Amino acid sequence: MILIVDDTPENLISLKKVLEKNNFEVDTASSGEEALKKVLKNEYVLIILDVQMPGMDGFEVAEAISGYSKARETAIIFLSAANTENKFITKGYSSGGLDYITKPVDMDILLLKVKTFYRIYEQSRKLIEIQKALLDEIEFRKQAERKKDEFISIASHELKTPLTSVKGYVQLLERSIEKGDVPTLKKHLVKAQIQLEKLNELITDLLDISKIESGKLKFNKQPFMIDALLDSVTEIIHQSNPEFKIIRTGTARKEICADEMRIEQVIINFLTNAIKYSPGTSEIHIKVEERGDHIYVGVKDFGIGIDADQQKNVFEKFYRVEETAIHFQGLGIGLYISAEIIRRHDGEVGVQSIPGEGSEFYFSIPLYSTSETD
Image 1 (tube, rainbow, N blue to C red):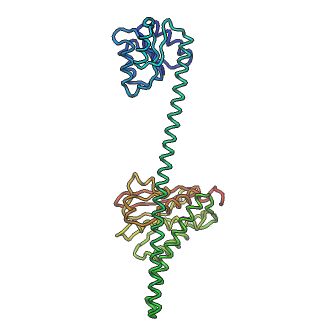
Image 2 (image 1 turned 90 degrees about the vertical axis):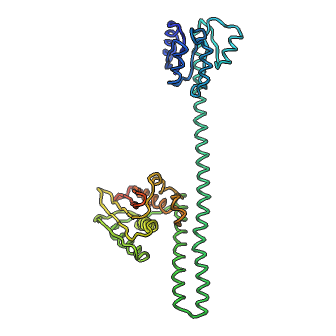
Image 3 (image 1 turned 180 degrees about the horizontal axis):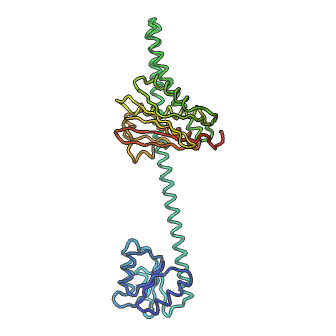
């Protein structure tokens, strides 16, 4: 928008008419004081400012405008019927003006200058937008780099822990063999197997991340009953965590067409997380519902919960809730993989949580996914 400042109404009307005829949005002020009030309220691309005005003259107005941070970069063209000597023109530039036109105004020249300033303004705005986009992109690269470095550090630690344990149990096994202590031998074998299984799970997650990144995560979608899958998963989880009671409500009588192994992976991830982040509790709830042409599965715990501002991030790659990262092991990729699996089934994944009261992680998938089998 252009602001025309002139104490002569005829000048205001004629300039406004010409500029509006050329599709410029125009505002007017009949005094320096009125102009300053308008500059405080509105943003202008260009100010056409008369020099000779009662009260504040054009030079004083320009100097005042240059003190406003919002309007400091606004272009100013001075208009003057007198004071065309070099010293007055110089004063105009030193006051913050970018150009000087004498009266009577040649409208063709004025329009040419206005169009030039508008073109410069548009180019400057685009450059600022490009600069901001570049800065945002650089910051995103930096954040990604920090996340990657943190992940490598965590992954190294998480992989090293079961490896160190297995190495220790192998040494104990050697001693037990030498002593012929079969009961102790069996006990150490079981513990070594548990650590090897943890190691296998970590490696599987890392491989899944690689497949997701390269677009090679495969799916084999076949019809199956979700209730039968839940029976199997519940039994597996209960065997390794007998202290937890898993209560299921609801049922799904319809078959779904999905990758049973991948859906099982998601449910196991939800259940193991529910147990992991619920120290001191002994109950997990699974809710199953048919919702139109979708199946809803929710896993609710009564553990530590998640703050509202962190819930939106828990399905991001490598994200770990800061307060829990210190106390609980993990790579921070299980939920990301789960979310990708559900999305590739045209489904939705989410969490509802209250800090100190627990969380419910859930997913909803259509009975028949429209995505191609990968």
